Amino acid sequence: MENEEKFTELSIKGAPQIKVVPPGPMSKNILDYQTENESSVVSYSKGMPMALKSGKGATLVDEDDNVYIDMFAGAGVMALGHGHPVALKAAHEQIDNITHTLDIPTATRKKMVSVMKSILPKELTRIFFGGPTGSDAVEQALKLAKFYTGRNGVIAFEGAYHGMTGASLALTTDSSHRDGIGQLVPGVQFVPYPYVYRNPFGCPDDKVNEQAADYLERVLEDTHSGFSKPAAIILEGVQGEGGTIIPEPIFLQRVRAICDKHDIVMIVDEIQSGLGRTGKMFAFEYAGIVPDVVTISKALGGIGFPIAAIAYKEKFNKWPAGKTIGTFRGNMVAFAAGAAGLEWMLENKVAERAAELGKKAMVTLKNIEKESSIVGEVRGKGLMLAIEMVKDKKTKEPASDYAKMVRKYAHQRGVMIEVGGHHNNVARLLPPLVITEELLMKGIEIIRGVIKDIEQGKVS
Ligand SMILES: Cc1ncc(COP(=O)(O)O)c(C=O)c1O
Image (tube, rainbow, N blue to C red; front, top):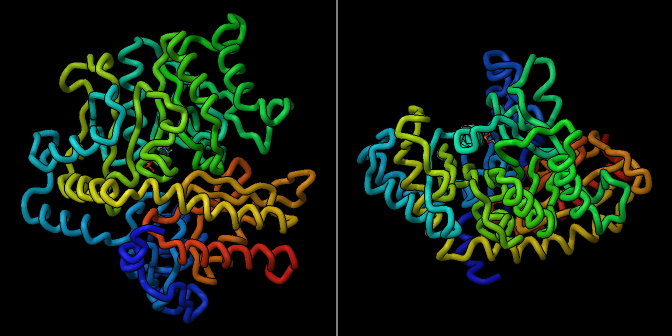
């Protein structure tokens, strides 16, 4: 890979190094404190039990000095890796200067907006920072669409994940998040996303993307479908938590055309798939379309500072000052780190690198799919990679227990990954985009070994 030395320096050499099976005694002490004092709802530290001490690039160190290859990147936040020196320097400089200004502009904020505009399609002229989380950005995108159209409904997709707040949760399909908490925000209806491996239509697999668009078109045009004309259609550029489901360009192109035809606001949620993750700055670029509104967060704050934004077309810029407000709309440290990080990404062609690394990773992942009786399908676009675990390749019975075992034993052997998917049976790999080829391949080989051990009943 080009410039590999520059990227090698960012991470700890010789990773992974497991000195004691996690959680070691130091980690356990902190974990026990968490269990006793924090909410029962805490989850990541249950899937990967450890307490973290430090991070560098695509590597993390726990309290017992175990060194991990990070193939999770804080759920996709740490695209630049941990402690990226350029983003860190910008943050340090900013923190001594000014840190919070609501939406009163500063030179740092100006720089952030101008860097963002340089990576967005020129049609997306307006940027709004509405609150620090991805869920906030989704809420603001919906609010904008509803205000502009005067309509209320939203169409989202099966398998979608858009957040945990009121309206964003109503757009999120995972029943484990939705059930048992009463009435969600009304007006949301779901249609199938083109999940080819679990083809929802029974048509030939190569027609699934067209069928998904046909389905959407039909419910909008059939006066007896039970769908009213919505304010917006929202979809992820690549479905992330839903199991890394990658649509064909034709699907996004058709959704774009349907939105145009019916005067519906097209919102593409790039909170996870954006900022280089899929090998392009935004996943929708693969389809050559421009959404009406794009949501951006996660990697936007450079090194994990919370920040979120929507970018939208000029014609929507009709809401009056103060129509939507919020306290945390101006985290200067996040802007400083984020702008410096984005510039570094562009200078070092990080998105292109993610595309290339992703292709190399997919060669090995495809071999794993071929050789393993419990891997149904592997998928990947850039460094958004997934291994769908099944009980049986023919029946495709989902194996959520295997996916959790992959996470557990990969962690014990020094690799951090995530589990997701419609059936929680997908091992998801979201490494920092600065990961070296060597670490990426090492991590995948460790996962391969775990899958073999599961298949042969050596671990349970
Ligand atoms: C596609 C997508 N949208 C929205 C969100 C919500 O972001 P946050 O957790 O920052 O609220 C996420 C989080 O994983 C996401 O992946």
